[in-house]
Image (cartoon, rainbow, N blue to C red):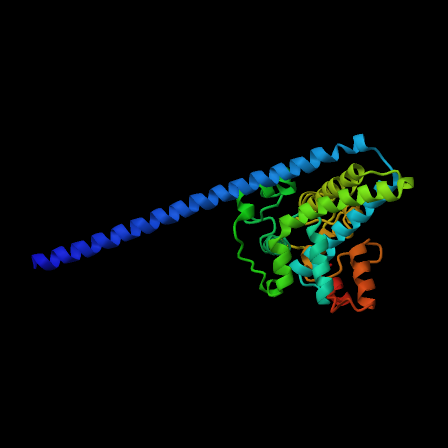
Length: 317
């Protein structure tokens, strides 16, 4: 009996030691991950600070029509990469696209420097599932407007794995590649704009631009401008504007943001029909992203554009 009791006690003691060891390992791993997430938040803060401070150099490099044109083209690529690509294709699957055009949209969205395409779309799906609830990382209702606009990207929660998997697009190796090498693309983009400016300065001096000027206007300033236009959808469009539909959150339609963000400001429309490729449901609701989708549909680059029927729109008013 004593031998049996001793054996049982040893077994229990061994299990307890084993569980304690596992617990310590889990705690250690948790601390490592927490440290990594904190460092990532700090890195994002420093990168954003660099871009904002660097954009102020626009007053030093000055204005030329060449630089301003490059700024507009860069902004067009970035904002449509986000609205048409990251948002309406990868996050919501509101249409289908040829594989090479799908890759282009992922690349264009990556130039906006808002995170890898799979990360962005995954977090956005979570936003719709928990809109303006506790698990919504960028809600101005459950957090502050500043947190919804910028601060959430510096938080540890921003870098934690999400439940909203992206197997539908992660199956494409080129999409995984561009998502994995997203940081390299940032550096290449900076080199591209500076090199473009040097080339224009050398071969086309009549354009009166320089490498530094194109770098500031085409890379830094266009990125910061795109950031604040996009981020304002999270902050402003959950606080200010009209609410046409009952969407179980505080999403609002804001016509000013729709002009600036290529139709994304019809945010209440979008939260009611997140699966729709069209955000501006009526002719007076400016939605350039939808117009671009219709144009690319005509040439066969995209198809199966999902939109609510007139009956659905009437029934939900």
